[in-house]
Image (cartoon, rainbow, N blue to C red; front, side):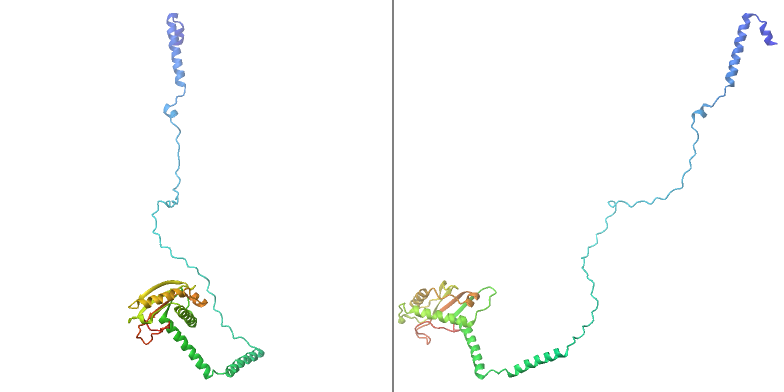
Length: 273
């Protein structure tokens, strides 16, 4: 047998055999150790994943800034509305009691009796009323010819009689002043002349001017002296003061041959100089 043969070998040849046997045994043992593939060891285990079905996600609206600006509609004015009241029924006629009806009839009868018993205006009263109306008309016409009022804004015209009485008083004052001023009637010219002066509400003179001297130089000087001597005139009456800011008077100087010529100051009516 080989083993037994090996034991009968000399020691010098026996050592290599033992070494060879030991080497075989070690290799046999190494081969018996389980071996693993390095790729299998290093590779990670296989993972299996299953995809979920797609979920529908509602997309949010784009930001307001990215949206295209809509055209601004013209804003209509807002109207305040109120509930319309329902149709109202026609109010029934008031019910009068017998006493109220009798009192109303008695009142109407009294009015009728008073109207019947009122005396009608007599002929004298009607004539007086007509004369008063004519006097008012004449006063308006005469005032328009010789005096001019500068009315205040939004003021009512004064009473014509009040203006007439003031003008009469003004003429009387001029005639009284004329008695103290020397004048020669023979110095009158043959052409008309005129002057104007304006009076304030307090009676002071506001302005004075010669409108037309003609050939009446002496008469113009005489009238100027009379007017300046008469100032201040009487203040305006209350109603005239409320209505007018000033009063303009025109004095006409007539020629010596005129039928209306004479001594003193008189009203000229609607006649112009």
